[in-house]
Image (cartoon, rainbow, N blue to C red):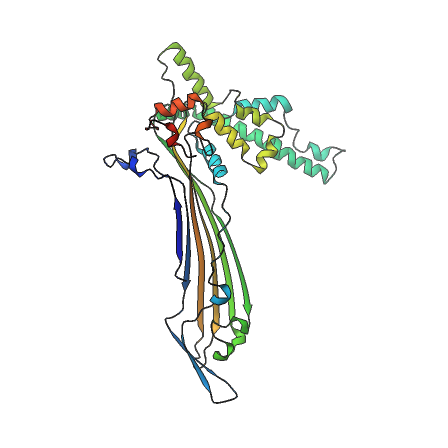
Length: 388
C-alpha cells in the first residue's frame, strides 16, 4: 500500500537541446508522447493502536496492538480506483489549434454571405408566436430555434464585422509584426470536476481489522465515502507564418490578399464549403469536424506551420473513506480515521507541423518544402521528425 508509478515515454529528442541557446528562444521540438499513472495511498492511522475488548459474558479481555484502517484492505484486495477513461487527445488538440491559430480571420464574411444568400434573413422575432399555424408550444419552440440558429449567429457575425471596422489597423499591425516570428499559443479547456458523497451508519463500519467488540456504541459509527474525479486538458504550441513583403507588384497584390483574408476571409476554402453544407451544423454538434476543416484550410495558406505542438491531459480519481464517532473501549474520546486511494494519470501527445494525426506521408510537396525551409527538419530524412 505504499503506492507505485508506471511511465511509458518515447521520442524525447533531448539531443537537440543546445545548452548555449536561451530557453526563451528555443523552438526545438524535443518532447515526445508519454503516459504516466501514479497510484497513491494515504491514511491517518497511527503506527500502533492499543485496543481492548471484553467478552461481556466472562472476565476474559483481548488486546490488539497495531494499525487501524477506515476501509477493509483485504476485502478491497489492496486495489486502487480505476483510472478515468482517457479523452481523445487528437480531437481535443485539433479543436485547440483551431482556437489559437495566429492567422485566424477576425471575421468570416464568406460563410456569412453564403448563408445569407442561401437562406435569407431569419424571420422577425415573435412572428412564429403570432402565426395562426404555430400555436404554443409549437410556436414557442419555433421561436427558440429561430433565435438560436437564426438571429444569434447573424448578430454575432455583425458584431465581428463591427470590431474589424473599428480595430482593423491594430489587427493588421499585429499580423505584420508576427510574420516570420515564433508565435507561442496556449489553450486550456475548462477543468472538469465531479464529486459524490455517501454516508452510512452501523456496526458494519468498525475499523479494520477489528470487530465491534472493541468499541463502545459501534452502531453509531458513521462511514463517509467521498469520490472526486477531475480532468484537465490543455494545449501548448509554437506557430510561424509568412506574410509577403510586397517588394514587387505581384508581391503587393499577394500581401493585400493575405491581409484581406486575415480581416474578413472572403475566399472559398474547404472550411467555407463545409460551413455552407446544410447538415454540417448537426455533424459539428457531435464532433469536431468543423475544426478539422478549419485547420486544413489554415495550414494551406500563409506558409503557416507549427514548430511544436502538444496536447496534455491530467486525470485524477480519488476515493476517501472516513470513519467518525469511533469510541474505543476504555477510551471515551471519539476518534476519526481516514483512508484515501488515488490514481493520477498524465498523458501527452505530440503534433506534427500540420496538426494532430497528420502523418508525413499525408503532407503535400509544398508543405514539406515549407517545413524544410523553416529549419524544422535537421536530418537527411524528414520522416524522422514526424511522429508516426
